Amino acid sequence: MLAQDRRKRLTEAMAQSGIEALVVYGNAWQGDYLRYVTDFSILEGHGIGLILPDGSVELFLDSATEAERAELETAGVTVRLAPEIARGVSGRLDRIANHRIAAAPLGFMPKFLADAARSYKLEDGTSLVDKFLMVKLPGELDVLRQAAKLADEGYKVFREAAVPGRAQFELIAEIEAFFRSRGCPDNFMIMGSGGQDVMAMAPPSERRIAKGDLVTTELTPAVQGYFAQICRTLVVGKATPVQQRAFAVYREAMEAGIAAVRPGATAAMVAKAENDVFRKYGLGEYATSKYTRVRGHGLGLFTDTKPHILEDVETVLEKNMVLVVHPNTYHPEVGYMVLGDSVIVTETGAEVLCGTPRELFEV
Image 1 (cartoon, rainbow, N blue to C red):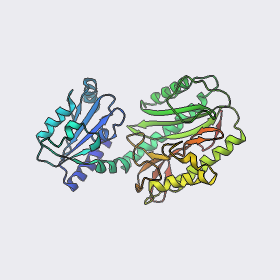
Image 2 (spheres, one colour):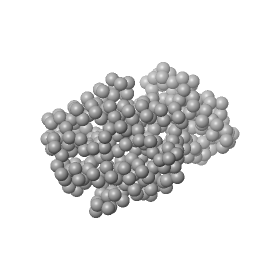
Image 3 (cartoon, rainbow, N blue to C red):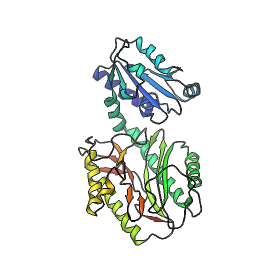
Image 4 (tube, helix red, strand yellow):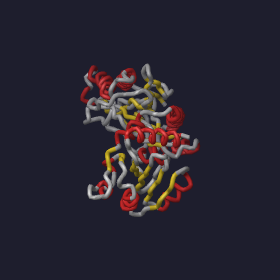
């Protein structure tokens, strides 16, 4: 039903804007545009989808394995194996060269397809699809709530599995087993363990967890392709007063950011609310790009979608957008700390989806 609702929403928008065909691209790293149109989660190679005003969808894949899987996993989609995918799609577009054709994201399209010498012209349809990727339908919000609940459950498993002597990859294996046992094969996850030497999070390594370590993670499981995220920090053993004081800054910053979430606010306003807390405590340097990438980001069919929560991003928040607010960064006294909750933008502010307490856990 979600796929049908998305296609209906798209075709209505195409009709209003006079677009007669929409082409979308996806790969294994970022497949949200492709999945929005085709309901296919690509795992390898390249995929290009085509949707027409009547709602018919064609999916071009350059991997025979992916094409076989798409035949089994998609409904109402014509799957086409195209080893030379750019030429295959170009040949299809030649047949509708007199139509208005939009592409999203236009900058991701193979150069051959976007070449001005082609018989057709591709307009930039990125903003049209971006709007729908950011502002969710009711059914999309429902599955994001389920994904956030799964993230809470996963973090409980993470806490119980974070014991001294265990390698990071052994801990992550247990979390992955938990999510897969719940029917969730998709989880973006990074972590860190240690003290002042740890500057960020990364994929799990062979480093072993030790008593006194800060252990950080962000868990991002998906339900029906929709990702929700939780970020938390724990201490193996008893937290020191310095660690507790440092963590209090992160909690204040996250809560300030969530309080700034409302329709009409901008991503920049949310980021500033978080960063101002760090500035208040003389930690403004650690809210810069030298130590941290973003102060949060959108969530949906991709783990890190628009809008990015930064002080120079003026994207206006709208009702039914979904974000994670996370002032994750390095602290000079204790090392890297994280804290973040997924939220839905509502008419009156933010609906917080994560139920895990906002505390520095001791395990």
